Image 1 (tube, one colour):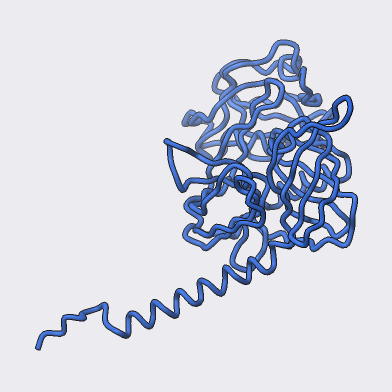
Image 2 (cartoon, one colour):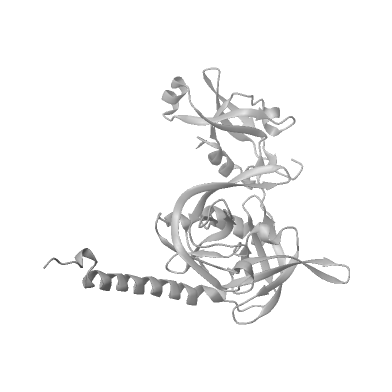
Length: 333
């Protein structure tokens, strides 16, 4: 008699059961570990005679003494609100600092002895890896959704007072995200927070497509700066540009293939004062290789503000070194 069970026989069913059991064990362990560390936020604005609700979202406890990490767009321009926790506590919070250009913000609650989450490193993630999202979607506190890392290395644009910046190495996941998840945790299977949920594509555009700001070396520095200083200082050159293949001569001389072509120089900017011109191709800043806009963006840290900085450009078949003194990127800068 022909074996009609084929490859889907009892042995396969048992293997699938074991796999589902392992999957459930991972998700439930992440839930046990992280639900106490994720708060639901009610963002408030002080008005005459009291406070007015401004919005809602989620946040992740990062220190036992009351610092929480969330999304800048969740708190917006508000300065306070209420954080609700799984143990029933409702604690007032104040906004310590926000950085719209990374879509990260830090708040602090009035109580202490909080269960801090463990921060992981998104640079270690792999496509297909299991991730769990925890937050406050549509007002349902402590909600979980699980999925995989759908893609890595995505980017999305953020804007602040006319300045546009691309958040790089964004995590794409198919774990279900809804309004209110923003600011909540994206966790790996060990319960380490590897991302801050920030954006949902849809409805009517793409379901099952969510984005999270990665937790890595770069964002850890931003978080620490927001905790200590309340803002992130960035250097301003005053150019707009994009990647461009290097001419053969420059490519041979530098042993690389691309740089950033200057397509606009802002009038009165540090770049203009230093003599950087349209069609210059920037290939290094302070000795660090620049091949695309994200390379240049990462180098514009507060350390460069007011400091003479060596910029290597390719112009008219020659490499030229230009000294630029970046200023601070400000809302009017």
